[in-house]
Structures are given as structure tokens and as C-alpha cells.
Length: 328
Ligand SMILES: Cc1cc2nc3c(=O)[nH]c(=O)nc-3n(C[C@H](O)[C@H](O)[C@H](O)COP(=O)(O)OP(=O)(O)OC[C@H]3O[C@@H](n4cnc5c(N)ncnc54)[C@H](O)[C@@H]3O)c2cc1C
Image (cartoon, rainbow, N blue to C red; front, side):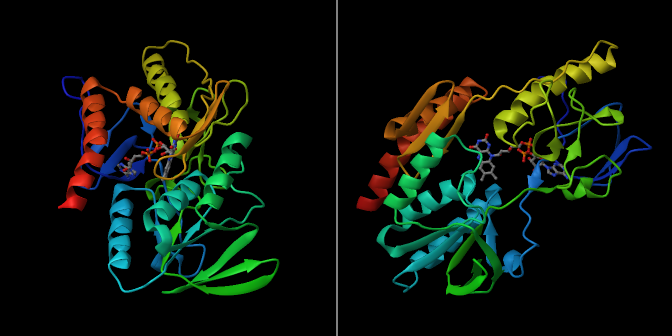
């Protein structure tokens, strides 16, 4: 997408940011000076707060995480175990989507539980999506532990605490979807940060007291022009990116900067292999029709025709290829 534009793409990691010198150091030791800096490093899944979590639970955030999960499932599915006991920690959108997908994949062999420390799952979701999610989990016989904390994890067990009672359960697979921690490159920078380490911005998305630095996406704590916080979702980050792009240009050309306005476009949630829920812009839909609509919306939002073509071909061919492989 960046070919034939004035943008130089460097595939590397930022190791250090030197605020006084206004330069960044790449992993290759290359130094890059900047006039304006945009921080958009996203976050990572924190697993250090619970004993055993970093050793025994799998995070689910990156492509590498997805491959690790696929490999773990392959090992469990080809083992002699009659029942595969899986727990998903975190009843947010990722946890709910994963629990439904895993339940569909494992079928009768799966014993799934979803562990959530609050009194309900999807606490910020529209009521319609939450109700659809409860129904989907119930249909797939996913056990939901509400008001429950994970106390520790072992190689084949997890200890849960509910109403001050400890319970240790056998488990074959634990998926960790809780929280977002700030990227390591930002942790020790003297930038204004909230309690979660997110960088606090002005409505223009400039970092407070650092007008030449902009921050957006999962790492930013941003209130928009109406004073509403921006959710840490892809739609929030994409809308902020438009505003940051404009404001970087405006600040370099001495024009007035624009305040960010967040427009909530609604929420979509997959609920298993062929179902979904969506609520927003006056529309509420669930079941297979929501699943199809969600896919079409994602297709429409692909950045180029080429991407749209590749993705739709993949969607069309995948079921045909899997039928052919099963019958071979
Ligand atoms: C499993 C899962 C499902 C989700 N599903 C949805 C959904 O359906 N809808 C939705 O709206 N949101 C969803 N989200 C949230 C959404 O993905 C994020 O809010 C969004 O991607 C944030 O954008 P970002 O640009 O801040 O960060 P990211 O998209 O995470 O991008 C950050 C980039 O910076 C790179 N990076 C990190 N550190 C460095 C470094 N030191 N040097 C160089 N590069 C670096 C990373 O590799 C990454 O490519 C989901 C999140 C997860 C984890």
C-alpha cells in the first residue's frame, strides 16, 4: 500500500526514544531524527500479575499467538484424551469470541469455561450483543464463572477464587485475554501516563506538554472534543489516525490543529463458526445473517480492490478445500 508514495517503510523495531534529542533508535542501531513523532505501538497482553500465567497460559493477540494456539490444539486433538478441558480467562469481546469458536471446534470433546472477575461478561457492550453472547455460550455449553478471579495457574490446573472460596480444577489449555499493557519502548519515558501506563493526550491527539509528539490507538488515553473517552478498538484507532495525519501536517505548516471527534459506529461480535451479533447505527442483528453482514462489512473496509479480491476468494475457496481434504 505504501509503494509509490513518499513514505519510507522500515521493517524494524523501535528500541529507544530519546525525547531531548528528538530521535529514535532502531533494533539495528540505526538512529532516526524526527520533527514530529507519532506513537502508535499498540499494546501487549500482560501476563505477569498472576503466578503461572506467563508459563502456562497462551495470550491471544498476535499472529504468532494464533499459530501457537493452533499447534497446541493440534497436539490435544491428536492425543488420547477423551475430553479437552479449556478455560478462557476474560469475558471481554476477545474472550467471548474465542470461547464460542473453541467450543465449535472441539464439539463434544470440549469442556469449556469462561472466567470473568466482573458480575457480567462484555460489560461495555450493547445489551443486545451481551444477550446474544449469553445465548451463544449457553447453546455451546460453555460454563461461565462470573465474579471469579484466577489466583494461580499450573501445568495442568488452575485455582479460581469465588466468594472467598478457592477451587483448583484440572485444565488442558488456558487462554489469557485480559488487559492491555503498554509497549516496553514507552514504559520508562517521562510522558504523562494514566494508571494503566497509557499516554495522556490533548483533544488534538498531541501528547500533553509535548506538542511535537502525537499518540493514538491502544496506547493513548484520549478524550475527544465532546469529552468522551475513545475506546481501545480498531475503529477508535482508525478514526484517530485520520485526525493525527491532518494535525501533523497542520503543525508543520503552521495551521490550526483540529480536535478529534469520535463517532461510534456500533459493535460486531462473532459467536462461533457461523453466527454473530451486531448493534449500532439503529441496527440490531444476530445469528447467521449477522455473521454474513459482518463479513461483508469487513470486506468493504479492506483498503484496496486487490485485498477485497484476495480475501473474498479465500473465503469462497476455504470451505470447498476443507470438504475436498476431508473426503480425500
Ligand atoms: C484478539 C483481538 C481481537 C480484536 N478484535 C477487534 C475487533 O473485532 N474490532 C475492533 O475494533 N477492535 C478489535 N481489537 C482491538 C484492536 O485490535 C486494537 O484496538 C487496535 O489494533 C489498536 O490499534 P493500534 O494501532 O493502537 O495498535 P496495533 O494494531 O496493535 O498496532 C501496533 C503496531 O506496532 C507494532 N510495534 C509494537 N512495538 C513496536 C516497536 N517497538 N517498534 C516497531 N513497531 C512496534 C506492532 O507490531 C503492531 O504492528 C481486537 C484486539 C485483539 C487483541
